[in-house]
Amino acid sequence: MIVVMQHGASEALIQEVVTQVKADGYIPAITRGENQVIIGLVGESKTGLHEENYATMEGVQKVLRVSSPYKLAGRDFHPADTLVPLNGSQVGGRKIPVIAGPCSVESREQIIEIACAVKEMGATALRGGAFKPRTSPYSFQGHGEEGLKWLAEAREASGLPIVTEVMDPALVPMVAEYADVLQIGARNMQNFVLLNEVGKSRTTVLLKRGMANTIEDLLMSAEYILSHGNANVMLCERGIRTFEKYTRNTFDVNAIPVMKHRSHLPVIADPSHAIGYSEYVIPIALSAVAAGADGLIVEVHPTPAKAASDGRQSLDYAGFQKLMDAVGKVAEAVGRSA
Ligand code: PEP
Ligand code: MN
Image 1 (cartoon, rainbow, N blue to C red):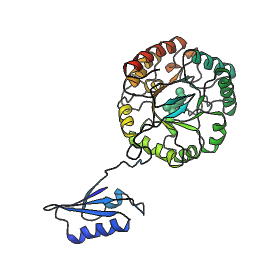
Image 2: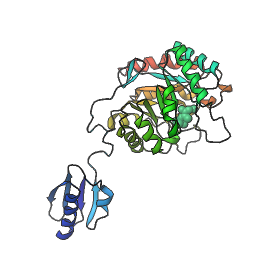
Image 3: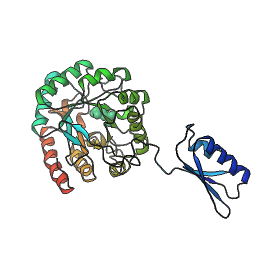
């Protein structure tokens, strides 16, 4: 952190800041210009005082941060890519896994059938929600623990690991008994109690970006999970809200290289929620792979028109096959494989 004093700040005000810097456990590095002084804060704070505290001190013009506030999620202290194990391969490596399945687990038969179908077409993992975060309390809320049991059966039948959402901090241990990956949904990205709980778990987490959250917000949420000792976190860009009305959300393709640059965690793209219409899912998925995404999560349903949720954005099997064929080609073009 660097504290920039106002032009002509008095020596007394400068010394007040220096005293505070020392009291916080930093070593002050003072640079005196002709009429402006800047004070570098070297080392670690012992009191947890932050830039806002210094910014409000008399005589201070501004405070600049030189390292990121997400120490564990950022690359400053962890330059190498984190590789997260998934179904025998590693997310964040050369291979681009595709996680596929319905928005909601609808029945035992439905999830087993879809699991086997997407496996056959090359999926790496099965997605499916048993606890659904619906905008309306009157919409289908998911089958709960029974849905998790069906997911476990689908894993047994297909060999695919399970990615499923957990919404309630109290249910993290129960959901983790069934899931291979715990999904934190966009609406819960800043549910800090939930983040702490999945951080205490040792099950891999897929952390989705909130629809109105910045990249930094997402990385700070990842920091919560990492700070509790769970190192297996995957970030997910799933579209953000903009003024555009022809699509459900706006896929922030910028976020992919930016997150890869700032963080060592793997980045997954969700083109289904990002655009909201099945006819546009494939080009958005391909743009994500071209931009450097480490994996995809896609909604697939055999009869999208009959889906309990998100049918409008779900690919049918033919669409999923088309996606898989195209992903392989784009992956190869950017030095990866699908
Ligand atoms: C989902 O994956 O079905 C879901 C609800 O996603 P999001 O949290 O991104 O809306
Ligand atoms: Mn969905």
